[in-house]
Length: 241
Ligand SMILES: Nc1ncnc2c1ncn2[C@@H]1O[C@H](COP(=O)(O)OP(=O)(O)OP(=O)(O)O)[C@@H](O)[C@H]1O
Image (cartoon, rainbow, N blue to C red; front, side, top):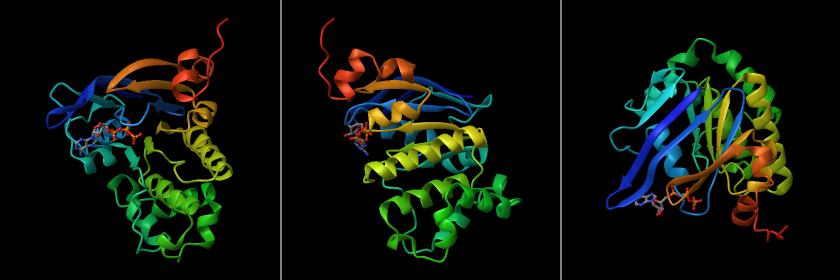
C-alpha cells in the first residue's frame, strides 16, 4: 500500500496542494480526476520527489517513509513516474531508453528478465528496439515511457495523462495494458487523467481534486454514475430525478 497524508505544495505565493491524502493499493488502479490546474501533475511530482512538499507530509510505501527521500531513492524504494509528455530520451534508441530505466539497483540483477517482461507487455517494442525513440509514433512513445518505468521493477507506477495525444483506439489499448500491469504484475497504479470516462471504466477507485483539495472519493463504478462527476468531468447535464 502507498499511504499518502498531508501533502501540501507551494510555488512561491501560490499554494497548489492543501493537505492531500490518498491511498493506492497494489494490484489496483487508482485514478485522480480534476479540471485544468487542479494540482494533479503537482501531486505526482510531489510523490516522486520532483517538487518539495511542505513540512508534515507523509508518504509511506509498504510501511517505509519516503517523503523526505530524493527522487532517485524513491525509485529504489519502488515508486516510478511516467511524466506528462512522456519524458523519453528522443535521441536514444528504444533499447537504450529501456536500459536506462533498469538502472535502479533493485532492477539491475535481473535486467534481462525485466526486459523480457516489458516486451511481453508491449510486443511492438520488440521489433523496434534499435529505432530512435523520437521517430516513433505518439502511441509507441507512450509504450517506451511505460516500458522504461516498468524496467525499474516498481511496486507502484504513477502516470500523468498517458492518453494525451492518443487516438481513442490507442487510448483503449493503453488502458488495457495498464489493467494487465496492475493485475498480472501486482503493481499499484496511480493515474492522472483528463479522459474521465475511459479511466473510470478501468480504475478501481478514484479521487477528485479541485483547487488543490480532495473534494470526493469512492469506488470507480460509483463515481461513474455520481451526478457531481457527470457534471464536472464528463460534461453531461444531469436530469433531475
Ligand atoms: N513551476 C510552477 N510554478 C508556479 N506555479 C505552478 C508551477 N507548476 C504548476 N503551477 C501552478 O499550480 C497549479 C496546479 O498545476 P498542475 O500542473 O499541478 O495542475 P494539473 O491539475 O496537472 O493541470 P492540467 O490538467 O492543466 O495539467 C496551477 O495553478 C499551476 O499554474
